[in-house]
Length: 101
Image (cartoon, rainbow, N blue to C red; front, side, top):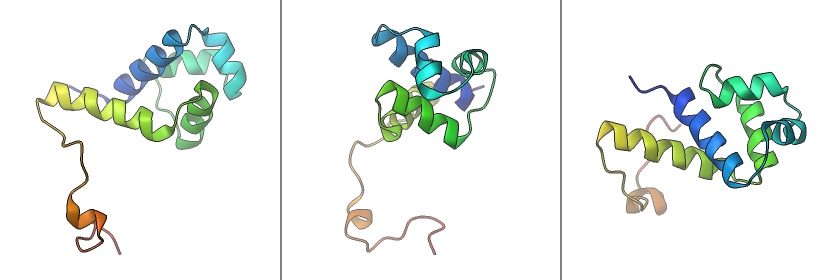
């Protein structure tokens, strides 16, 4: 079973390690407890949107980049291809987003 929190944790951990930073450094910059950030990276806790923004800011990454990476990882497991372009109807506003009001 695919769990969003596990994929998110993997992306955050990979980004932190790529930067050569410790969990302590990122938790301090994000103002998140070391233990809680560790649990998020291990996929044991769900990150609130506020906490996620704090962590991505501390990593110097756009939230959209992190979510895109998570989406790509999930797509691989699901064996689906996600187009890397936005459908034309969404760009020009002629096709409403699902559930848009």
